[in-house]
Length: 310
Length: 310
Image 1 (cartoon, chains in turn red, cyan):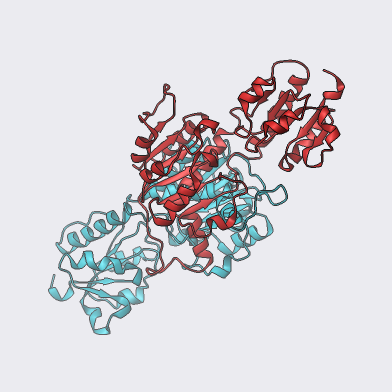
Image 2: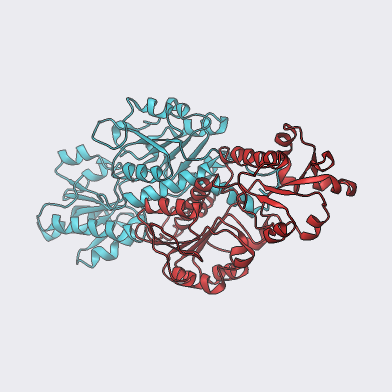
């Protein structure tokens, strides 16, 4: 490895907090949003947030690129087959924040089902107390069915949590595997048989729009969809239309088709609780994810095997 | 029992939905908010929501009163010793909504700790996505300590839920009892050693202001208080002052010193999630609570032992 190729590129302003820990290792850091064309030749590594698209055109303009180190768990913005063909390694944060994401999913589930975020707004407007303006009660969560889409570390952590509420768990994923909970034959079957569908699958090119209009309608007017995975897994236009017409009951979303999601897109959508992609970020998980990305860069630059390849 | 004394009094407009199930039993129903003075002599039973004060003066004006049937679990508005002295039986809803209240407590806990209600408002204003306006991350819930004040059916149901999140449970109540979790020597000790204090105790005349200014400060700037029991258990003025100065980190409240709580009281209080006393009311629990109250009235009028005396 020549010194010429040892610069680290931060791909997006949201990665700015990575600059100090990378520079602390003695590596020169370049910010993409301030990068001069001449610097492209020096970039050896991209430190990246996996949900942000990196086009092959851009990657192809970096002749020395050898590693994309995602600080995130997801890496749906990275075309991994293209990177493999071009000899670029890809790493991500592996198993470092599943419990945090599952906590957040449960918070969205209870907060949406039991109208906590809505109730908060009503109390602050002075309402909600008289029979006339009292919120409509919801069914108990106990005994209701949760369908988990994607039984990875996050999906399993959600399953353990909702079982403590007395909820009944099933799941679906494209590949069967040994699990404590039954797998539905199809995603549509899971949706039909679920009161709450929790999306916890890894987003890939092949599963864009997996939670289709038909799946959304199968969850139904009394049902709820929670998404802590990636916005592109759900047909978001269909989700919004179903919530507006009451063909879907409720939704709790931490991720969106486009991020930032335009606020006006949600102005007239009832029975939703929305958070700005904060499920995985805690003061415990963030330093671990940063440290793992830095370690992957260090191993790569030292010519050793990376610790968490995708 | 003479027919003269067989009327049922609904104590408050919020009990209006009880009128139909009571009349379905053939019992004449009187609404307190429309009652003529002459009707006082006919009242044999009050159907009541336990958090609403019933003064001895009012009760003393009902010469035929023999039963106060609370549709609620709590009965802090009823002076039970006075009723006993005057031969008035008191019943309540026993063990019918503990799981629902515990779900709601968990929703307030996660929703407050992980800034879900706040995040929802930020997304709807178009914010929260850039480094500059991103919400400050919180610690993981896993490994954090939950102190439960009052280990009854609700407290134990909360304990089981937070353990599924990897949280560590302790409790305090005035009386020791066999339990799966350690009891702190004092409430102040519990507060000092808790990241989240969950108030799930029965409110009584003796424990008003139990969660005092000193207890609130012991929970501290990084800590959170959740209350799903009764507002009077917490010194609410001290709670608000501590939240405003940052001596307490966060609060999730379903119950208030005064209900409805005045909206302006919470306008400048940060890091709070507030719901209008909805923790226990679900479409599963409400019909069970109504049916139990009706059955208590039926048994009493038939001269049989009531099923859920306080």
